[in-house]
Image (cartoon, rainbow, N blue to C red; front, side):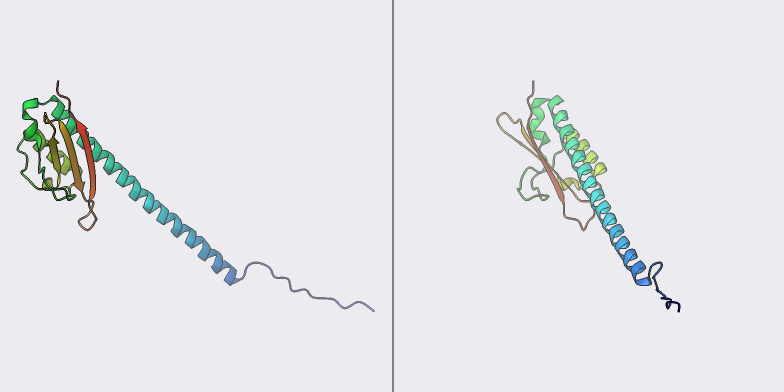
Length: 154
């Protein structure tokens, strides 16, 4: 008498549930990568803007260095107030400062000239603090950069 044959029902392939779970895990991984890419772009943009703001402040200090030292007080722009992005005082009428403010506005379209500040202190007037303030979008919090230096006229 022959032994009875056993029929093994071995599963072959994947079930629908397994495929759906693997697609879900893959999708979550892709969403994570997209989020990291967005953060990387934001941080890169912020770093670029800070570098650009530092360059602009350095340019103003260099222009002050080659200017006539007797005109140093005319470089002051809205020198009063300690609240960020809300300086007070008289705006500068110095041509070099006005040109620099135009460059700041060109680099940062939402950087209003009345929010930038140049403070000249010291005896003689050679300690300079440049405060830049800008926004990427009107709804964003303002970004600020402050650079202080001592200008040594010859």
